[in-house]
Length: 95
Image (cartoon, helix red, strand yellow):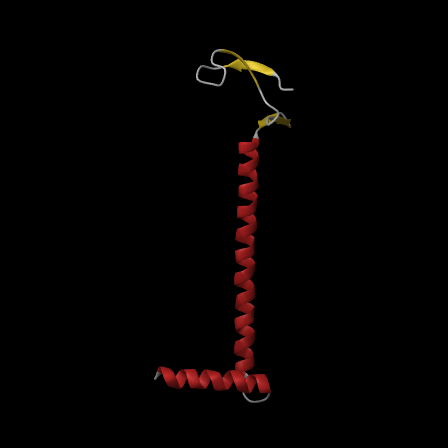
């Protein structure tokens, strides 16, 4: 059951008293409804998304650096020769 609070003009119930539904909860003295909860969840997932994008940028940077290091190792390893050869062919096609 909700509690009765004074209603303002234009609110549901008009002038007089209106009942606050169960969607409003008292959280540390703050009245939070589903709109507030949705906003909080959206801000949280926004921060998570930004952190994941930053992590992806860092990981991509290290992957590229690792591939460059493997390619610069020349023909000492099979993987190095493959990446070096691909880079040479790609460079010749550019010119």
